[in-house]
Image 1 (cartoon, one colour):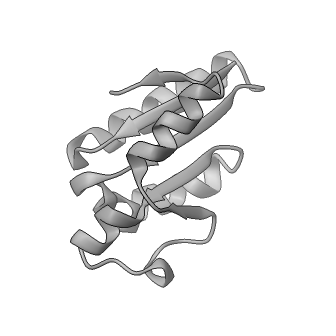
Image 2 (cartoon, one colour; image 1 turned 60 degrees about the vertical axis):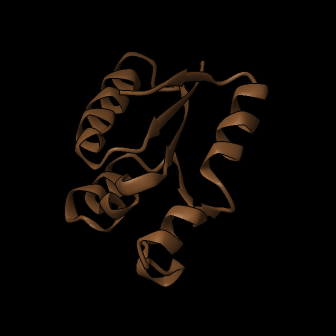
Length: 105
């Protein structure tokens, strides 16, 4: 199973984390990507999200460069393991084209 979670609202990031944990509990072999853009990009700087990266290292964490620029976040501000993509929407299109199911909490 391949699933991409899309979060663009900061308040939805914790819900996405719970959804991902529940999915991994049901299917530990699931391939999961988390694409974060918009205001939610700030969530990648929060301690809870950094801890989540450590707890769920098999998830692919993607950060939208456009959102990072809009919120004055640099690549070096992000925790190790977060991949910066040129545009979050392009990553979403690519992943869905590759067969990922789309979920937006």
